[in-house]
Length: 139
Image (cartoon, rainbow, N blue to C red; front, side):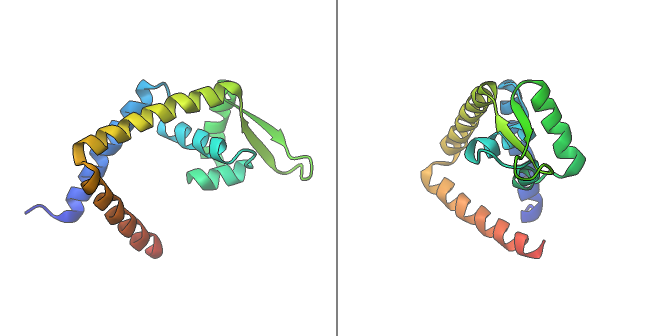
């Protein structure tokens, strides 16, 4: 019988690769989708807060934000109360891109749900949550 940890890792790798392809077909990438999601759900985040939301730091977040700003997807402005803080906001194009990516993510979730069924999907969510909670406590 295959080791559970190995099976989990390879399943995550396969589903991750599929999700990356879905987002690429929609014209973007996972890091950009995560950043746009953060800004859509939490308007006015600072660059540092957005990095924490996305799990990105320093030069990595700056690299992605530079690209998004160059593409006209976001704007960055200095906070009026604290000039050291940079606020990030979606542009109209950023909102449109987020909507396209979010729709692609919804279609991907629908594929997963169709493959699993409602009951198994609910069980999988509970199991994944338990694993994330368990291993996050160790981190």
